[in-house]
Amino acid sequence: MFNIILHNPQIPPNTGNIVRLCANTGAYLHLVRPLGFEINEKSYKRAGLDYHNEKILTSHENFNKCLNKLQSKNVYAITKFGTKCYTDVKFNIGDAILFGSETRGLPGEVINQFSENKKIFIPMIENSRSLNLSNAVSLVLYEAWRQVKFINSVRSNE
View 1 (cartoon, rainbow, N blue to C red):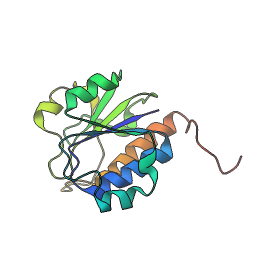
View 2 (view 1 turned 90 degrees about the vertical axis):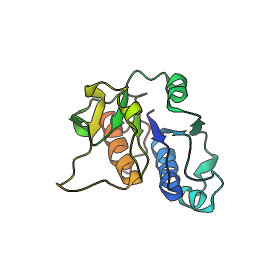
View 3 (view 1 turned 30 degrees about the horizontal axis):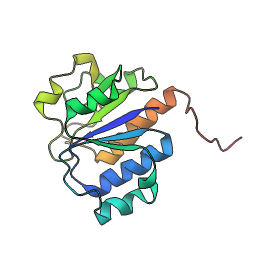
View 4 (view 1 turned 180 degrees about the vertical axis):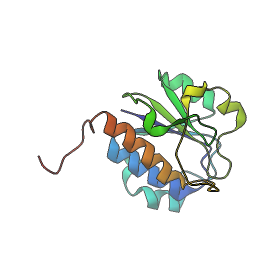
């Protein structure tokens, strides 16, 4: 399916919510260290419910090790410096989507590894700073999944 990468996430409930999101959409979650919390933190576990037992979560010592492990053909970085809206991207199964930390976004040395067409953004009104991380991941992941016709989903009309 899709790969979601969180670069140095800081807020445990956000990451827990994203664990839950990934488990319910068939996506894999990759956490790039350092994390702003411990994996056994109560608020992280509470937000993720019982989905932490799923085989969807991997943590990596750094971003380059994560990329080497994934070997995804397409890796997109969500950034306010993006040149293409996330809805204008043609996502494919196996693509990876990278999100920065809630407090700092993606560091320059990571953003600079991406070509302009792999830097994508989520539209917001003027003078807005950011969306909640779990909301941002939801928007982009569901758009990617929609594009592949919600493959492997359970539909209410079946």
